[in-house]
Length: 612
Image 1 (cartoon, rainbow, N blue to C red):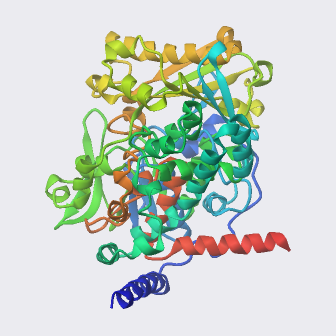
Image 2 (image 1 turned 90 degrees about the vertical axis):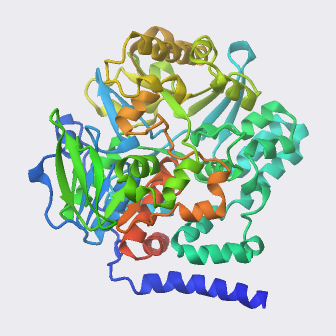
Image 3 (image 1 turned 30 degrees about the vertical axis):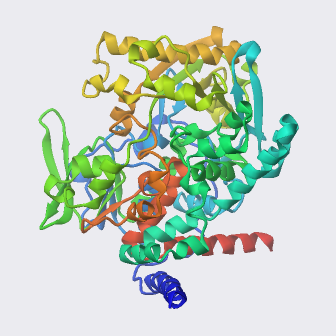
């Protein structure tokens, strides 16, 4: 009897997904290849601003909207562009003064800095990732490969430094590790074997988010997933630190195995191995890439696709409330200006790219959000870690400074988790005198082949430094205006920021005498510019609890509030790729069409065409 039940559940699941696509009235957004030859790069900032900085006003609101989308990060841009390609008219509202979310850049003294895009995997051949970006930008986003050794894990500074490069190619990195740690061959082989165990995670998680929740609960109760998936193996259910410690007692190797945990911002004692493995596979398989022309090329080339269908992307448009009528969402209120004038805009569908906390704790009326299980998720899960950002401009070229197209993960020592936990547990007074346990260091100007084509940038270069931080150190100033947070705030921010620069200069001493510009951003800066309520970069914390199968299923694009959908990193995983695929799933849910299958079909066609 149990066998028949299990078979029935599998057949019902496949039938639901099949009928969903078959019965959809929405047109296929990927029915044909939308790529056109690359147009000349535009360096005139006024022309770029005409696309990226279209200020909000009543007269710019399109009529007969199909949907309103809150926030303009890559998740929202992906959702809006896919809907536009199917003929839907979408209004995107961004609270900042330019579109792009974490894909935006800023310019000061002719130095341009990316704020969130440091490297992306799977963009060097016709992968699904590249196919989607190509189609929503009409082939206008080009990708430059980074160095073969795209990451470097450094443990210690100066004379104590041990340097472990990470090379493209899973087998090559494994060979590299075995050479550096010959006595740890079995541990290294087991680590890579464990990486394979989680290979199907994104497909399974996507299916859990798309099947009706009642059916998911029935499937989970039947325990069929214990039989046909790896979701209940230790790679999913135990924290990554425990698993790595179980492989080896060599602390340098433990640190190298865990080196890029900052890419998802959850300490190894709380994070899941699945996320670590997902990142490794993403970067190792085909190498890493950077958008030619910088991160702003993404929004700059996706926005015209949204506008072709009659949509609009407007900035300086802070949404203060999601409007409802008899329990169903029906529009949004934009409140702006010194008078705080509210402008109501109506549409049958509202899609939020503002994150779970903003959507359910700030924007929805309390009477509505209190009835939603998403509010319970907000209480049950925690936000990701806050972050400090330091942007450094140097008055020498990347060639003169011998900068490479890679990133450095700089650890103070090899006691990776204890050092990090101890640092975050400190008071702000103690933290100001402490060495920062982990820095991410990158050189955007060295990665971008278009950099020197901008007038006046030939003898300039940039460095971005990121460190995770404790939100509690800064929340005192969260409601203060920019540039008006007071001397105490400036002292705290600048002390940590200059410590980050000092530690970076120990690795790159050639930087020290040519620093021409610095801009230090705190978690409060993140809250102001990208509207992350706790100064975080990655939304919900990527803890083991977040990836419990039922929680995965509940974090879906279609909410339990009629007419309200979610997009971006909170419904899938963090980062560019996680947010982008979150955007695909959101478009799929809104349109009632399996657009992921449409994109996969086009990818296969393009690969076959290339073979001929």
